[in-house]
Length: 162
View: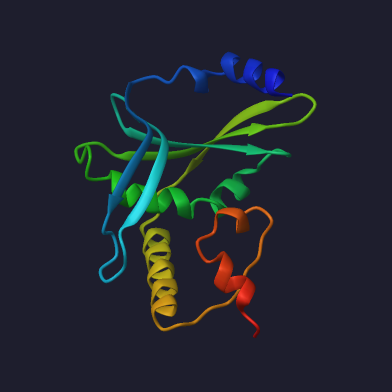
């Protein structure tokens, strides 16, 4: 499977980005929401082209994504845009997911996520409300096979009795 996915990736234009690479696995950390901890982002790929700064997040999936799925996952990129917009303020941002589908015949698709200021504001407010809940001691367990092994709240989650 890995060989098939890598072969498809190497044949795709995503493997040969156009523009100047600003960062690969670039870590950015900054206060984005007043009164909340810094937002920490690890950007998979950051490129400056002639007309934009492109933030690319690579995803793998067992099935193909739709544009609707990319839009629903877009809050991550929208928050990343808040960290990146100051790096090259003279150029617009472009946000995209590159999704590598791990099927019998792997595929790669790129989905653009539109920067909508209302969605950015909503994402910021969501983070702020979650942080306020954490500060006030609100805790709702949300166990997950995918997230529990690396979650810093694993022990309190398991200890929570309702």
